Image 1: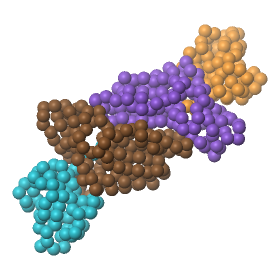
Image 2 (image 1 turned 180 degrees about the vertical axis):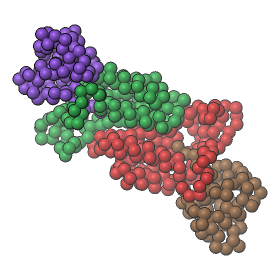
Image 3 (image 1 turned 45 degrees about the vertical axis):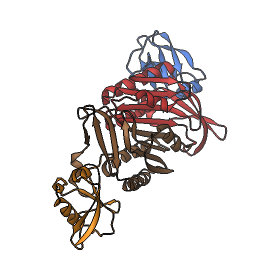
Image 4 (image 1 turned 60 degrees about the vertical axis):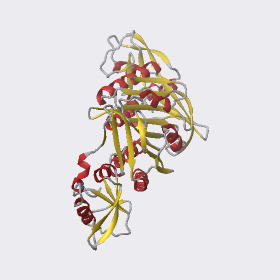
Length: 146
Length: 146
Length: 81
Length: 81
C-alpha cells in the first residue's frame, strides 16, 4: 500500500506507522519534519505552509510511486500538511516498511529529499518580532526543470 | 536527553517520539524493528529474544552516548525488548531528533547498525513446523573483538 | 499574439500583487517567452529569468511550448518539508 | 592453575547444557587460555577458537588477562535488532 497526500489537519505519525505495519516487514522507518523555534538565527513562532495544491498532490504521489519502485518498498505513506503550523507541529511525515532495514531507511530519506526539491510548497515563517518572510532556499532557483 | 534501555514490555514508538520532541528540533527519525513472518524462507511464528542483560544495558547506553557525540544529537531514545515476541511486535525502537534532518537520520541508522554488531542479544526463532533455532549471523563470529 | 492565464504563488504572488493574471505572449510561445512577458510587467523583473514554470501541473523546460488551454504556473523556489 | 566461573548464553549454553560453569585455566591466564580450556571440555569443540569473550561486561581481546574475580562470559554471534 503506497499513499501520499497533502492534508490540512494534524498529522498523526502513529497512524502512519499503523498503516505500514505488516507481518511481511521487519523494519519500519519514519521521518517527521516539525516546526522549529529558530531558523537562520531568527526566533520563529509559526510557519504558514502554502501550496499549489493540485500540482503538489500529483508530485507527492509521483514521488511515493517512484520511491516504491526504486527501493522495492510496498508499504509507504507520505503526508505533508499545509496551513498555519505552531511550534513543534508536524509539517511532513514519511513512513516506510520493508522486510529489511536498508530499503526502509533509504526510501524514507529519498522521499524527504525529493519533497524538498520538487513539490510546490512554500513556507512563510512568522517571527517573534512580528515580521514574516517566505523561506527562499536560493540555490534551487538556478534551474528551470528539476 | 539521551536514554537507552533493555525492556521486557511492549515498546510504544509514539512514546519515544514524544520523548525526543522539542522546539529545538526540526527533524525526527524513528527506526523500528519488528518480528517478520519469514526468515531465510522459513515461516516464523514468534521470536524469543535472550540477552546478557547486565552487559547489553551497558552496551546500549554506550552506543547511545557515542551516537550523541558523533552526530551532535541531544535527543535520542533507544529501547530494545527481550522475551517472547509475537509477529509484528516491536523488538527495537530508536528515535532521534535534531535541528536538521541529516544528523537525525544518520544517528538512527548508526545506532541500529551498532546494536546488531555489539549488543549481546540473541534471537531464537520459533517456526510454523514447531522447531526453533538460534539465529546465527555467521560472519560476525570470525573476530574476537568488535 | 495570444493571451494566457498564469497562476502565481508565495513570493511571486506577493511581488506582483496577484495570484492569477493574464499575459500576452507571441504565437507558438514557449515557457521562455512566457517568462519574458511576465518579466516585462511592472515589478516582473523581480522574477528570475530561470524561474521554474509548471505546465499542466508538471515542471517544464524553457523550450517547451505553451498554449492558451494550458494550466500555467510560476513556481518560486520550493521550500516544503 | 586457577578456577574461573564463566557465563554461557544462547547457542553456547545449549551446546554445553549449562548457562554457568567453572573451568580450570593456567596461572596468569588470558582470554585465549580460557577459550582453550572451554574447548577441551566435552562438546566444547563446538565453540569457535575465535569466539567473542566478555570480561567484566566488555568485549575482550584474545591476549587480555583474566582473573578469578572477573565476570567472564562467552558471547555467541550477536543477533539483536
